[in-house]
Amino acid sequence: MDSKINKLLKDWSKGSVATSPWLQEHGVYRQLVRRYVASGWLKPLGRGAFLRAGETADWLGGLNALQQQLGMNVYPGAVTALSLKGLGHFLPMGGGEEVHLFSDQRKRLPAWFMHHEWGVRIQYEWPRLFGSSDPATFTEVKHGDFPVRISAPERAILEVLHMATSNGAIDHAVELMGGLSTLRPQLLQALLEDCRSLRVKRLFLWAAESAGHEWFSRLATENLDLGKGKRSLYRGGRFDPKYRITVPRGKEAAHV
Image 1 (spheres, rainbow, N blue to C red):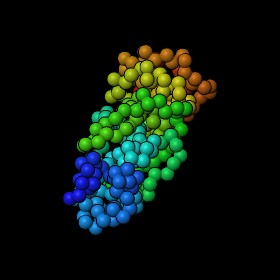
Image 2: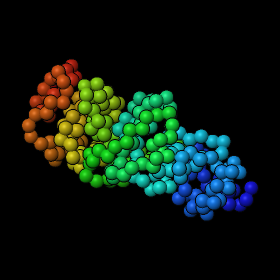
Image 3: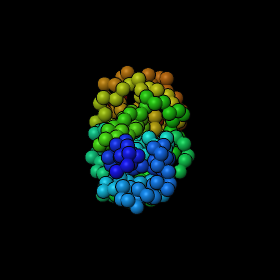
């Protein structure tokens, strides 16, 4: 084994994808890539992406390459982020489950990532839910030998509510809210003030107050712009006069 491939394999996290730009940074250019593929050291995953021979990678191994090697601002959010932090329903690595990836920039993901059979359905969107991308609203999880940047739980639950446009999805969001007893009120305050959606803010405040979490009392709700008028969010629900939205019946907020 030559010294170049030896160093490459040493720097290459197990279970992650190597992209052409990253290989070039390690002095492995196109001709040498072809030689390593022919020699059995590298296995093509798609155009411009490779696996270590004899290894496989899941979608997180691909995402790590997008974040760490290509510098893309793409991250797991909503229920996917909560699951990765152990705060939502268990998220298997395969079997057809949906994985929600977000970005603050309208930028396509590489074809090798979007078209590879990861065993999950990748849902990628640009929600423009917040006016900024404060680093404090993200966190990292370790997956094997490498880190992945994801939405912090405070950001993730607001993303869940943003995506909750049906009765079933709202019910699920309210259920998730019930388990989020350790959210940080200071970070929530900043996110709520930065949030562009009146609907999301009203629904969040109602669900949080209904759950009775201690951190809710530490929010300065008077500083939030909740807009005017009524919003019909839940079909066949009851009207909540404080937040002026329709909500699930039988789920009474603390103020009612």
